[in-house]
Image 1 (cartoon, rainbow, N blue to C red):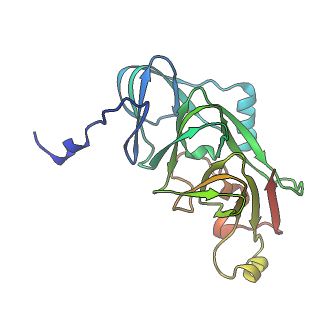
Image 2 (cartoon, rainbow, N blue to C red):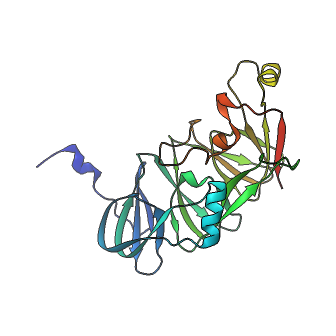
Image 3 (cartoon, rainbow, N blue to C red):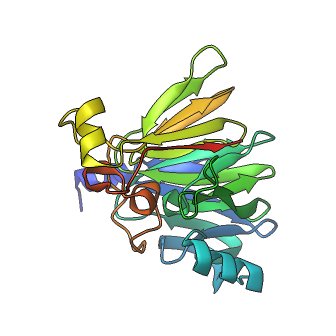
Length: 251
């Protein structure tokens, strides 16, 4: 049998994480360190690999129920090769080191089991009830695979050059960055400041690090409950409808 399809054979590599193609991740298991992956993300595997639901502590369950932020994971262990994907989204492998990574959990495909995850609050500097939001902080040393809708843009942030991003398009950023959130939250203020642009919440990043942006202003089409992302929590995009302008800062 002959076909151009046979040009898409598996990649041969000694690396633990390999981008098989832009929408497919290949991970090698050696029997030592396990992989944690989004539930249901396995599309194929070879070898002796076990899949089991990852246990959540009571505090993790309470945090996810309260904030809508958190990871529903399965643990992959054993020896072999596992392929992961999620609705043909683009996949990117990031090495997490000292600086840490802050990300919306909806964009995480897989990560090393040695990494630590924690739900953190991004609160309003004015202490306005309900005006903050929650993100996932990933720390330690290891790799994490992120997903984006389309090929992303990596923007460098320096003390001399801060970066502003549409809140619906941001995927992840360096944990050490300071974040200021601004929005026009009433129709009248939007008309005064932005006109009929359809723009709403934006995040300004200051410090030294990076901000990862996807070429889409919608959350990825996966089984994420409405209200888990920045856009949904703040009513961002064209449907923002809170009563006043707010500047939210994370220090």
